[in-house]
Length: 129
Image 1: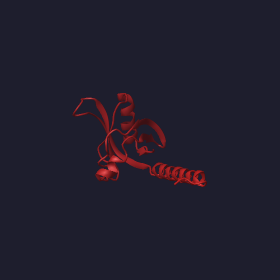
Image 2 (image 1 turned 60 degrees about the horizontal axis):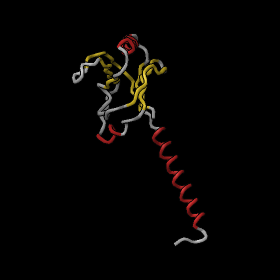
Image 3 (image 1 turned 180 degrees about the vertical axis):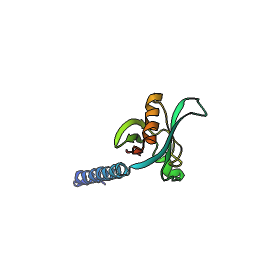
Image 4 (image 1 turned 120 degrees about the vertical axis):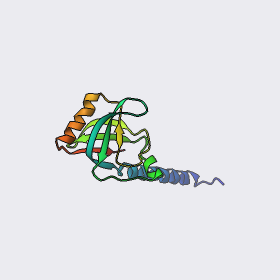
């Protein structure tokens, strides 16, 4: 089974695996999800009572189970005019682009997003990696 060429074969196999991993990682990183926000409001969460920011998309979209689950553990940003002001990690599957909730931030930061939407600023939620 092992021949004098085995080290070369093992090296080629390792290089192929690394190249595949690099291309797979690049494909995931190159697939950002950017949701343009049309509405925002701060409301109490029905389960916990915690105040959360609820975002509504300009163009609502539904996700399949696999599409929604692939965003779990990715980094999400809420941006105002291209500047990321809130950063978090997606902890639950996304079932669509309406009714997205942002939690774990001070209420004044959440309300700043609401004011930006009301003022007509470009607000978006981006899932970037």
